[in-house]
Image 1 (cartoon, helix red, strand yellow):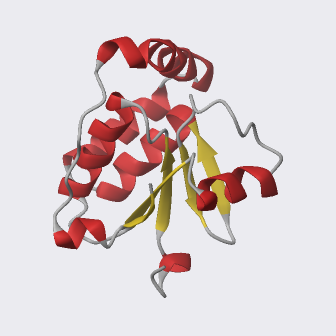
Image 2 (cartoon, rainbow, N blue to C red):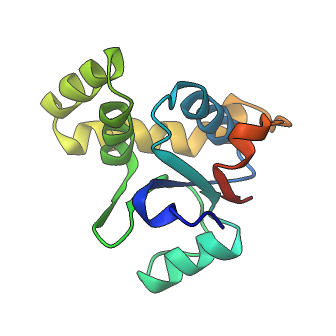
Length: 138
């Protein structure tokens, strides 16, 4: 485990989902300021995160963004915060996303989550050595 993990944003994702893995790779490629670490919800670290917060530990339809000792966000709020942290043109997405009502953006998120296994097949993601350092557990 990295020594500075508590100073990062940690993205928890479904490690068996092709769509989720696509988005992890997408974030990794754009995380120029090294803000993010990643852990699958199925990992020991992910299960501990869920358990400590009384969250569902067997259904992995929700993306979580955790800032240790501060907060965690779920679904569209997590996605919009990730876009904001990435900055640049992605910050605009965050701005426009906040104009939507959370209930609407979460419905869109839930629709994608329900259909994620049919949207993309599981892909073998091979991170670069630098990217590998950002993955806590898979």
